[in-house]
Image 1 (cartoon, rainbow, N blue to C red):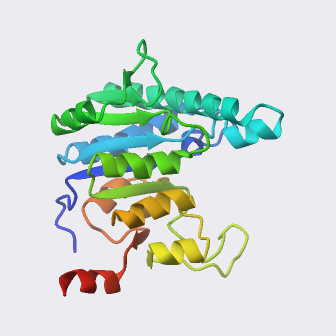
Image 2: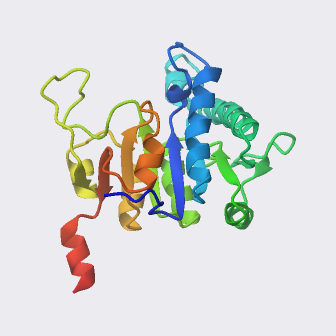
Length: 250
């Protein structure tokens, strides 16, 4: 049972761009962004060091752009700029509720954000500033899931928190299959072999290779970020599994 204290010192929160749309079909819902910022403020007050990676799917995706005749590399660069827009919106909302925030980008846009420099990002985290990491990895053909896994390992966080619009990882799409079951715990191997849509394969493999746990939870339930951070059983946990843990102890 949780005592209300955080079980993690440093986390990486992965937000989808779609999470910022609310009920809109495109763009950013300011009310939703403010609610997300309030949830982040709650865990910031607990002393947790917070890095955030945001997608850009509410504005544009490189894959969908290429489906409309735009060069894939160009489309991915457009998607990276979409993540910068989302990051600036969240930064504004966080600072309005009193949370000091820095946005760093993997592509240089010095007039609006810092470039991503690992040591500088670590220093911001140590000073309890929230760090928003925009523009993915800075490379085309890599998703923001891969960017989240990469930055999580670079910044030595304790866990990746994958915020979604469902309660966790299901055996099938719960919107299409009424018999789909919530899976409270599974391994990286389970995710890859069963092709479960947690994060893309490259991100899962990177987390597996560095033993980085992932918690998948519903962002739409108010207070869920805090519940995860203080150790309540929320959503689904993806890790190496008990067999790997027993091998490490032997």
